[in-house]
Image (cartoon, rainbow, N blue to C red):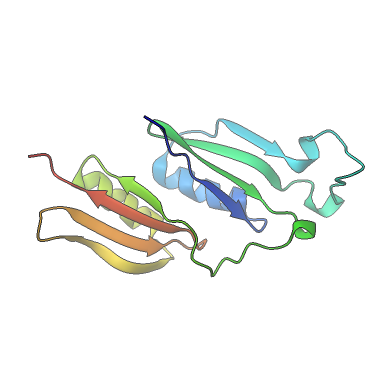
Length: 142
């Protein structure tokens, strides 16, 4: 079965966002590459003021990874108010679902608060303080 590993573009705050995500999910970054770490390329010069921005960062979550990078100013900006693809999480317990919801939605905008549905599942949908959209679901095993 294919594994989904979301990748997010940021406007220079990928490191701040990923430190926040790490505080919620735990774990350690498996890879951090800054633009200054890349070999110099005259066709793609990295401005000195953007050299510390992240070209790649990876945070393991469960069996997958959350990846991201910063977009350099010369490449344009990510529209942080557009509808981005949502990141869907299926929690293994209601406690885990609530922990993730409470952590990730802090400082964000909740569209659908974590609540029980008529079918016994729990669901929440929100945008975190970095503009990333999340859905969290927990379905009790019968």
